[in-house]
Image (tube, rainbow, N blue to C red; front, side, top):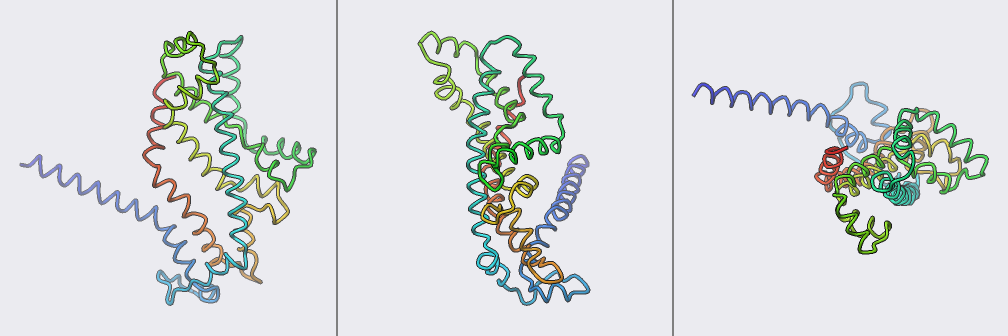
Length: 280
């Protein structure tokens, strides 16, 4: 009886800690949504932060979709994220298959050097990519936005680990039947690796959607701005103090699709990552 009581108390304590932690994590999201329903004047006149918007207003949401052209920025972001994700997955599939199944001289050395690229600071890569894009006159183009982002060493590593879980006997049997490497990859490995492929697709899409530094650096034409640039413009569009309520409304609109995407596919994401790290 005493042991059962301790287990109950222990569970209650754990749930209380989890509840406190959940409130701590979710509070910034609540504050973001709350601020988006406040008027510009009401927000700037607050001397003590108000935890309830009285009265709430949809003025900020209407403004970001009409005056601030958030729809245009989101369309650019959808084009950038979708195209980059598709190309990255395609390139990663080919590279992972080469490292997992093909035999060529120096494969292991090349793979180790490839993994070593993960230790190079992103700032150095950005500088190199920026100089290349400028010399090719690709600033303010989707080509300049997309091409430097289609290679991911980490995702290639995840796919390689997943491909290595498939028995070599299946590959040799397919080769005996006359199956080409390309057909083996997309007819056999692709279906068997769907959880991992779905995982890297979602994660890459989220990464592109939230991309800030590279789009901010490479675009100066508003026709090619992504949501990261657009939100910054919304913040700066008011005279004097920054338009924080308008910016928060834009952030809510931008965050909702990604949150829904993660909620819907959260099990597949965790399953794909777990499977990819089980062998290597």
